[in-house]
Image (cartoon, rainbow, N blue to C red; front, side, top):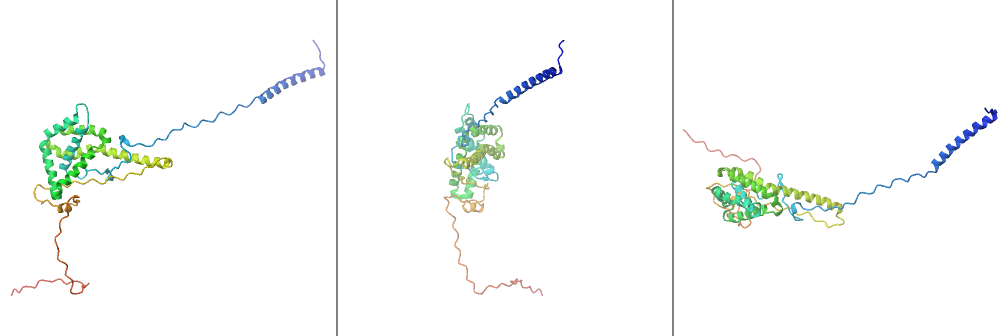
Length: 301
């Protein structure tokens, strides 16, 4: 066994210490010399989505006028109608459906023809009642006033964008009318008319929403696009006259004024009777209280 002196032992210890220190130093230097990893690339921006200009609903045309709202609903020629007028408007709506709706077997057309056959008498009575209403309200001008409203009603139910949603409703209403007795038609007519009108009310609401979205789109991108003006609302349709009694009133234009109905455009204003000129006062008017003239007492003696 080799015996080392204390100095040799110290040298061995120092040699081992510096050897280990060299290994640590090399590791530290290696770590310092490693290049720093580059930062991750920036997140790419989202893809550019082309802004789409709002389009009218149901294939309708642009810049279309719609009615104004009154009492929560859009004004239509079916407002303020009597039961007879409502039934006649229902008949006109189903007539439009018979001519315009194309379903398997032409259901709307078959229903309409069957309706005229089954409920012919009550429809005739309703037509006569509506005629009487116009004669009482407008006199000799009643025929023209009714024809104008009929044209408005036919045009209302013939609005092309609504036909797709109107036809199923018309067929459903036609089936209900054929399933009930004629005596129940007048009571059901206002409800049937509201059901037939609902697709058009929904369309007007959708078009109003389209106009709102279009205005918002124009406010954001109007500098680079052609800005369309908001269309003016449709004028209010004529209001049909109220129910007239079977006998009594003489037809005249003045009766329309009494019912707060505007006379038709082609009706001449009623002649006013001539009145004598007012007499000029001969004494100045007094502002004091007027005396009541009491009857003279009778002599009972």
